[in-house]
Length: 262
Image 1 (cartoon, rainbow, N blue to C red):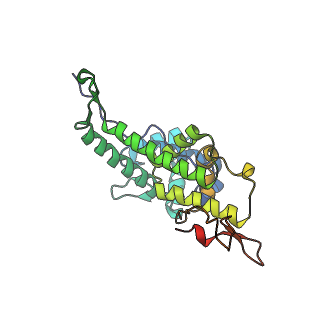
Image 2: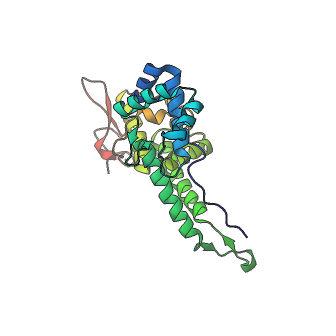
Image 3: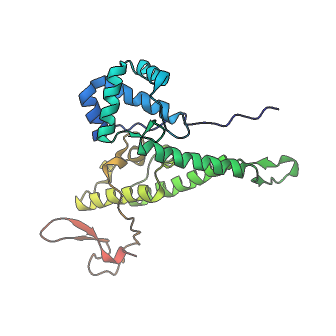
């Protein structure tokens, strides 16, 4: 029986709903040609295991053709990408970016671990004839799901609950492309801090969890800060009188009362 070929690269990759300054600079100079070219570059890079793309010889011709630009314009685009740090050149005369490298390195390492664990992880069912072999990949997916549920629970308690399954799927996707638990918790904490600072008390207008992590990607609006675990307010606290919040005089801002800080 033939062995199943090892998977290479990714089936899909993340594209921000808001491009950063580097991509905007490329688009402002080369318009749609520049944007189409870099997206085609990302597609080619993420199909590989190392994220490196050769633009020399026939490979460069193919990439230019696929991007609907001339070889001369392609050279100009590559030059600008290198100047603004959108791409870097490797020792092997190929091109990639730090972001592509970071994501693929993480995923390739996870795949290696899955392949090793696949051979050794066996779950015994109640009926010995129904033994189930669990692959390393399915075990890691369970870990992702558990972490996603923890993050969703933190969001529910810190902001508000809602759209649980959709939110967990979105969180899992973020974890798989390189975000970590502390980063996402830090962004939730930053949003909570913003709400408290602006004294926004009507939760009707709070961002839904599925929009924070998924559809609208609102997590990008908040830089992660250190997650602070708060305990319930002390009903006997003389400062906040059991509310857990304190109004700062002269500013009108609200802060978390010291009685809630662990």
